[in-house]
Amino acid sequence: MAQPKHAPPATRATEPKPASNALWKWIGVGLFIYASIFALSQGRDFLVPIVLAFLLSMVFAPIRRLLDRWHLPPVLSSFLIVGTLLLGFLSTVAALAMPATGWIENASRIEQRVQKQLQEISGPFSGIFEANERLQSMTRTDSPNVQTVEIQGDSAAARALLVAPSVLAQFVFTLVLLLFLLASGDMFYEKLVHVMPNFRDKRRAAQIARDIERKLSRYLLTITLINAGLGVAVTLVMWALGMPYPGVFGVIAFLFNFIPYLGALGGIAIAAMVALVTFDWVGWALIVPGVYFALTTLEGQIITPYFVGRSLRLNTVVVFVTVTFWAWLWSAVGMIVALPLLVAVKTLCEHIEALHNLGDFLSERHAELDDLKKDRQEH
Image: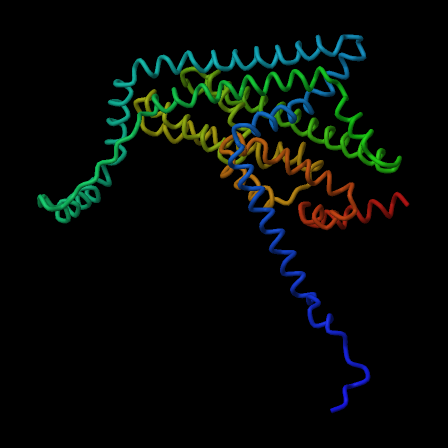
């Protein structure tokens, strides 16, 4: 038979299809994401102090530059900032240690009082509890052939003693790295600009770095001031309600409020337990945490969105998912660094054209329309 004159080359049959290329591309992206999450999880003890140190260096960078204008040597200014931070941390620990020591010494008496108060609260539900006990007794068996499993574990104090050296080492590592970062001045910015190939990239890199630092510094400083105001308000309210150690509740409110969502719930739970032990009337165990909840709601729904929300303009659903993800990955520290990291990513997306779509997704509703109107007014 005669062969066709225009036979297709044999190599065309082996060329990959576009659908196959897209599939392998997404498989590669999935493997990269999985490997990144695994690396972040396994390197938590090493990465957490590094991330905290870099975030703190961005917060205190404006203060360090202000001290530089006063002709203070960078080494001396870094020691001054880190020393002040360490002094504040030790003062906070001392303020919390005093009531904690008293609660530990009176643990047995506090436990008896809590049981008594809980019995008064559970009185109306005693019939339900008795029915539950009868049901359990009916299903319980004393047969010798049935194997029982007893779970034994270390006490909370023993676990705390085991974890304490690691936490202390991370804390020291964070302060030492922060000291070096502040003492180095703007070295990282200079190196970043130096490695860029052309003037346009150098300018963009410097602008991105400055913008991220400015937004993070403004955000963290604003949040710190808001939390300090919340701590003062909680202190005054707890003192007016007759709660013991009202200043301690102010410190707890200040520290816990750095943790989104769960921080306020933790403070409310502590206030409820202390009120349950302190007052004879059970109703105070609802009034005190209710007032605490009102203050945190006022802060979270009105004050913080007014002073912070305008500049961040983040998607609330993305914020919640991000905080949850980092809480799962790095526990409480992850919840603290989640929002600053999201701010840094969104700022990076604003300056890189290929990431504009991701930046629009991270923004709040209709934020892209507002930005478009702003650009039109400027031009």
